[in-house]
Amino acid sequence: MRKITAAIILAGLLFVSPAAAKAAIHHHRSRPVHHRKDPVHHRKHRHRGRQQASAAGRPGPVNVPVRPAPEAPPVTRSNGPTLLSPQSPMRMIGIGDPPGCLNGADPTSYIRTYAATVLRIVLSQYGGAPGTHGEAIPCLKAATAAGARVEIGIQWRSVWTPAQAADFVRQQLAFYAPYAWAVGLGNEQDLDWGLPGQPIDAPQTADQYAADFQAAAQVVATAAPRAVRVAVEGSPWSLPFSQQALADGLPGAQALAFHAYGVEAATIRDFYNLATSYGMPLWCTEGLDGPGVWVDPRYPPESSAQLADCQLAVAWLN
Image (cartoon, rainbow, N blue to C red; front, side):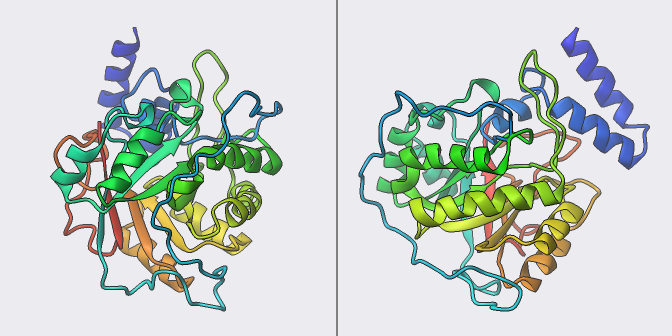
């Protein structure tokens, strides 16, 4: 029945308006059991529920030395300077979600295939919460040994309070701070998400995200002070969300990220202009085309040339 439903949704999207298509895609992607994209997004947590996550029984942080990024001051529209200049000539290629990484598999072959200098993972409760108890540490050890920097993406549930979002970030950094060159705060919080058998979590509003970011960024400043603080990590439809969240205030943000799949929404240049207006580089942390990437014809990956405005372009793998 699920396969039939998915087929009907896909066929219907060919004949509906862009707004209706977006709503249908959101509904379809919100259930990890239905769509390959959703199990990938299981790491992009939204932690705002009425129940507090517990760290009991979890091991403490692993003290493994990695090459840290230099610490930078909080970024606002007025103070301008950032860790990485928006016009920096450096262009980084990354891979995300290499198969098995969240359970500790070695990502070195994927790093070599892409000549990647960045590996991105996303930690979330969706899809069984892979990696959220430190299971990805062997993968990150291998990545750093291969010369790649690591971005730790952390997704909280939209139904959780800012204090709970911050607590979840704290729990994850207890495992992964030693490896974190960058920390992505949130993951497609502008979309709805769902756990199997539970009501769908509605998308966050921009002001809710801003409140969560502010609480979580303080945790990062303490637990991983040299890590780049990455804001928004929004969907391809997230430009208005990103604009409002930045206007509400994302103190300490050092890079603006979104997922650059080819949909008829805002352009990559729109996001680039927004990022640079706040003195930040644009990171496209999903959406680069290449071998083994996740593909959906409704929102296909982009070529490297199409992502020329992105200081970091990440291929999201199957």
